[in-house]
Length: 264
Image (cartoon, rainbow, N blue to C red; front, side, top):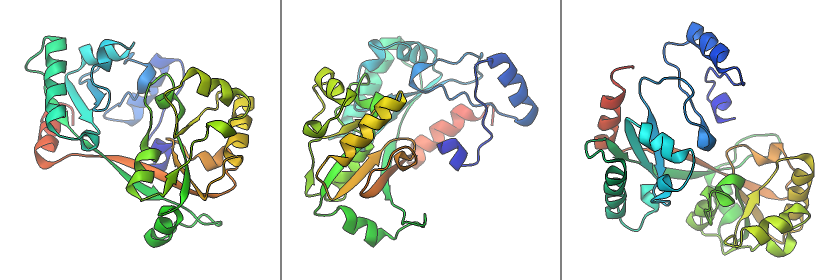
């Protein structure tokens, strides 16, 4: 969805050779964006692996994360601004170099900047002050990315970060309102307390998610999902979307530009 919003030329499918040949007809540079479940099926010119500053060491324990890390020409550690100290990111970078046995691999540090977005009934963007009033001092339900919170092992995501950032008075515990399959999700992933994972692998689970959301007593909903959740379910309340982007300082941007210089 984000690629479509940015009007990027986008190919998807299962016949990867055909996809590559078609993409090569229209683009000078092909970007493989495999997400968290893939490694590149083509022989890349440059491989960049993104590591999470809040998940140090995960590259040693997850497939295919370790493959991506070992294939990387450059590693980007993201969400450094979520750490108590940037020294922790430097320690993580050294851990990665030691794990890979590559002391010379370039590792750059980036921040994940989270900002709010909300729209009115006709789809118009609401002003900053209006959006702030929707959250500040209010009871808020946070819905974050399902895979991140469940098998990804994270206790929170971008929506939770935004709720704290905007001064929500209370982040509501959604567990008592869980319906259908969501009951089992909370039983299995007991580290989840203050966030609702956006589970929707089939129509029944989407329905369970909607019923759970509508059963929570709150003033506002914050979503931290990559897609616009309001296009999938009727949340029934004011909704603020957490938008996030990468931020690099001048030094780390220079490192990235040098790594990409052979192809850009």
